[in-house]
Length: 321
Ligand SMILES: [Zn+2]
Image (cartoon, rainbow, N blue to C red):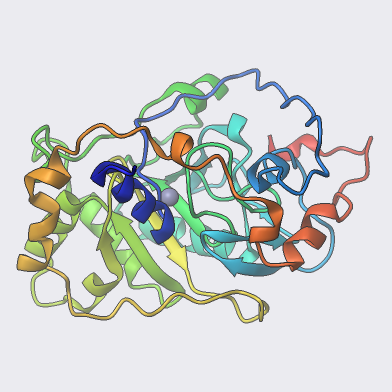
């Protein structure tokens, strides 16, 4: 029988955004996953297949399916060092996206630097080289249009490989989870989330309810952008940006517009109830969801999975690691 807690976890899975786990560190020496014994078995979870792809497909970029059930052809890597961004947790190999996401991150980080909001961005998980479900961490991020941005400004120096695997982001939510921590929350946090939400390419932004509460308090009269910023579990040390379907991707399944006003005040009450702030322990999404088979994804994702690598074996392909 399903407990209410497991129903909640399933609802979260279906909603397409997982409960963000505590901050995971990476490793300097990532090991390739062992080959699957029966990769062609139709019951093999799609996450085990997409999770073993280390290269994107060649050819034009396009998105297939929905943020929480899809894949990505012709992905581009966000370079690990830009003048106004750095990629974190390189061992995860999740700095891939549709070119529109790459440009968005470049533009947002440049704007943040230019306006003096932050020197730049630290970018966490985007998508796998071919998108698709992941073995760990997210229900969405499957189509190269989602990115996690740390709630810590980029320091004015290049981070080492070790720092990129082990540094922790700033936990801006207070210990009681009812508001942000005034010692850690800054106007820069407000500014970067607002700038992201104001970009017309952005479909939704997910933040912890305590962060949304702070944004509501500080927004003043300019509030239209708050509509896109939605409370969600986790998202207390990073915020999650989701872009709209790009014009080159007729197979991309759009999400309904945010709608419903600024989502402040009593709209947030639910998120501060005891059941949400102090949920009963659940077995966790991994136990509840061993993973859906490839047949659960749009049929074109089989083609994306089977297509040759962008870089033929033996050529230099390690530049994104
Ligand atoms: Zn995310």
